[in-house]
Image 1 (cartoon, helix red, strand yellow):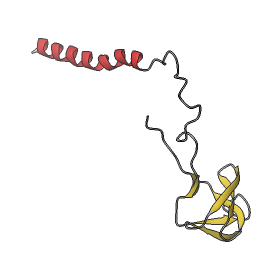
Image 2: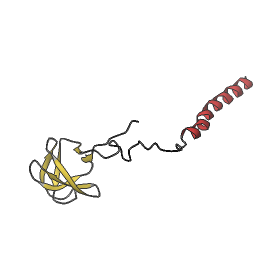
Image 3: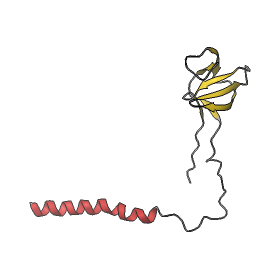
Image 4: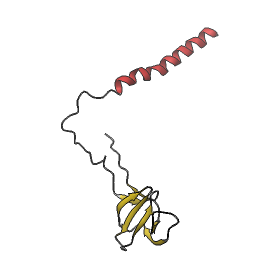
Length: 115
């Protein structure tokens, strides 16, 4: 019984060690980068700004305690001018309102390169 446990343990350790040994060769950097590869791919750049909820409060200051004077609806178009901490200074181009929107709700669309 002991010898079968030892054989099984050795087999399991061998299977677990195989990916670690082969990973060093797989993660090595290529010798050279092809010259045809673009410097910045379009999927690496941040996407357009988006709203992650139905509406976002537009506030007078970059604080949740400041006065809310308008609401940016999901169907409105807007631009982001600057960022301070977790707040973005935005202009609702549909209504013309300018103020601060909270970062968790106003964010950049994330793009990912699959190749």
